[in-house]
Image (cartoon, rainbow, N blue to C red; front, side, top):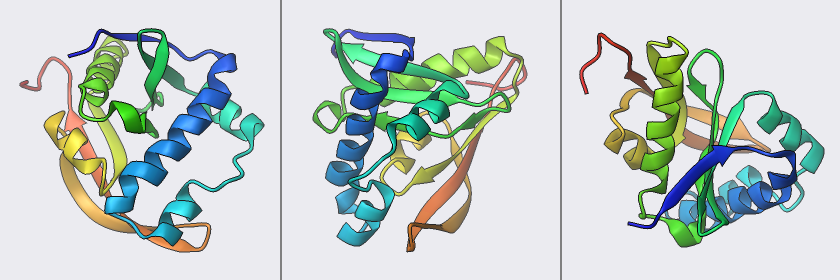
Length: 162
């Protein structure tokens, strides 16, 4: 397993994270979603200012391997994970697991008792390996395309077993 370093998001990460987000979806999600769904989800034009505000509005961490950004995750104050993405070239190297472990520790430190997310078909196995359970299947519309995803949660804290 590579040496994965987790650090806090910095504003100058925005371009790299947009590229990682778009590339991860366009490369890995194509096995689970149509080309039109993928383009709706990860369009050519993503406003860097909007993306940067979204990152800065919640705790966001970046995973690096040898100084290169390999993934990122965020955590809202109520335990919601809005985004977890791993660079297409760094899939299946333990990055998602390392990021999920990191935010679970942060959530425990903040006194949260659960984490929850809306995971794509592609991301669902990573979350399940991290101890998340599917609550329900849902359809969401993004830029005119309907995509299936899964509301998932994981109970954490002192009273939950690992």
